[in-house]
Image (tube, rainbow, N blue to C red; front, side):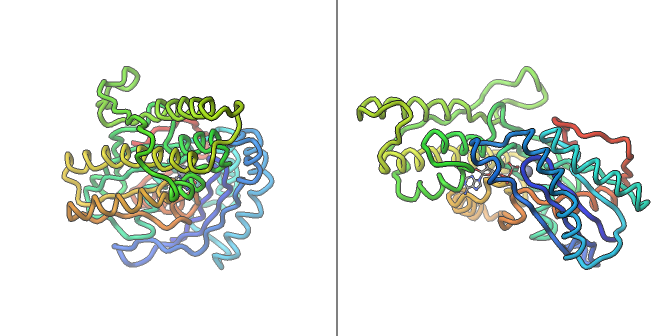
Length: 355
Ligand code: KG4
Ligand code: ZN
């Protein structure tokens, strides 16, 4: 079976062709994986502008899908999978409508996919089926969520951020430090020259249950907005102490110390919670997916913590950990093989839940 995948939930227009293999341990093979990034469009604004994103998807989608099919070397496919949510609703609508129209025209099944199921299956695309149960942290510009995978294709939400996503915190702090967008890679780079304990930023530890989602025990959730405020307060204080004007850049050594200290706190917060849950559920493997999994400190520390417990930790290469459509095609194949059949009535959902 060959599936065309389409992903337009945020600022990447992506299409991919993925085929099934005969190997149950490595069930999918990527034939093509095309991503058109809108980063340069949003750079100027310091973050993703939803209306600009939707319009750019409209411009790019035909060319991106055509390239995916050309590079995939196929004339026909057996199904189309597209991201249904969560994401920016105007952006989601472009890919979803395109996919539904194409599925109708070609008379092939349409499979709506949850974006985070895609991120989780990106681990399987690259590394093969995970030893189960697995605990997977999806950490990106839009999400910071912990899932338990008790069986292939089953996902249980254990916790998620109550406010900013970790990647969003990286982006906002980078903006504050004048490091540009996207902020994650800039902070990662700057932090190499800094002292990671120079500034004692607090770690936020939620202990109370969330009134809006009582099924989630509070201790499994994340919060990054307090940390962002602490960084802002520290930057303002340092500027005043150095006699700098509001908005003026701090000296490079200050910026490096702030970047390193902030990054240490984010990474420790993520990994403390991740490995608590790993222990609690007696997981047999650990996965990290999403754009922030590119962070060098996160990778090194996750590997060290997993090794000390004798557990394998899986992190996809960058092309599969940032938003892409191969992961959507893979998650779609998984869903289809589990017997799911989508309808052309499905609509884009900005806050879709994964169950
Ligand atoms: O998965 P992704 O490409 O898009 C979504 O948000 O869905 O993730 C992008 C996020 C951005 O917030 C970016 O700053 C962050 O991933 N990021 C990083 C690094 N590389 C990308 N954060 C920390 N360290 C990095 N090296
Ligand atoms: Zn994503």
